[in-house]
Length: 432
Image (cartoon, rainbow, N blue to C red; front, side):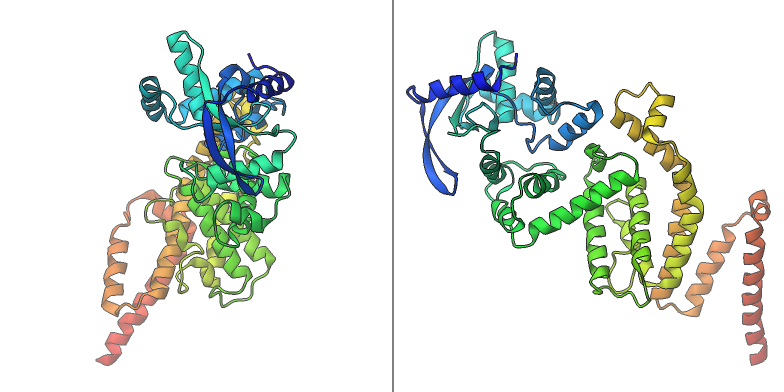
């Protein structure tokens, strides 16, 4: 049972007066200090809900459940389950190691019992205690400050442990963006200091914050505000797509991209919206990163650099995809119609899957058409090569299939092709 912050603070303050297990040096409040390490009952500790391994999941869970900001037993149990489920295989191995060797490295906790470093170890020790039917303890430095009383300074320390250059654990791809926003927006820490805390070059935090804004705008676009697990997938490709989109928009806004046509803010907003749809679609986020052909490839090798290709590509997207997106149920309506989905996120994933199935052929066809136009624009091919490609493409058409004549636009294309081949034929005939 989670005990109150006042009780935790009282008990840990008493523990500080006892003989320590040892000492540990720590850089805190701008200087290196030596702190005693104490053996702390797990009953006096709570998990850090901003832990880097699970922050996206926790923020999503809190949004789904409209959870209170107060630390409750429900929140404690949720963090515990998330820490275990994150990597059960690794956790099993660490659990066996703890059972055999015990804790090897001290954690760090605040004076009111918030675990700054050692959340996963504490979760495993609690599990070990249940298995062995005996209480377990976390050996840790106890900071002289309660988390609530000096959050900014403690989060500075937390940042260095989670995301600094000496960080021992690689956190999830979304964590650094969420954490940068917390530092800048919630705690009013300047971008230059965030760069330093994370052990990065000047401008790193500004870049993280700008990409985080894109991620939030994307979640709003798909009707899933603050459901941050919707930014993740199995191979991390969504993050890469946001990074590329940020780079594209920055180059275009700074007039550093080779875009030889007059744009306005609407064109750039349209680019962002279409890119959001392709991020949601996900089909082009493969190892080849073919989505980059929309606006990311250099040397004018992208749709956006060619006004005619872009206008046709964007126009077709607006004609087919936008109406499907606009008429889809919002998430709350979808949940009401499909109550069998367990959580809001599960419903959002199911709704996205239905959206993808509906737009699949149209988005692939439109992307392919624009890609072909770009290819022939950029590649210097001899007439024979082009004729062979055209012949092969035409031979793939089943002229007996009713779909050929069902689309009246096909007749227009056939007439245009006929005119082109007629003019080529006349050229040969004039040569005699």
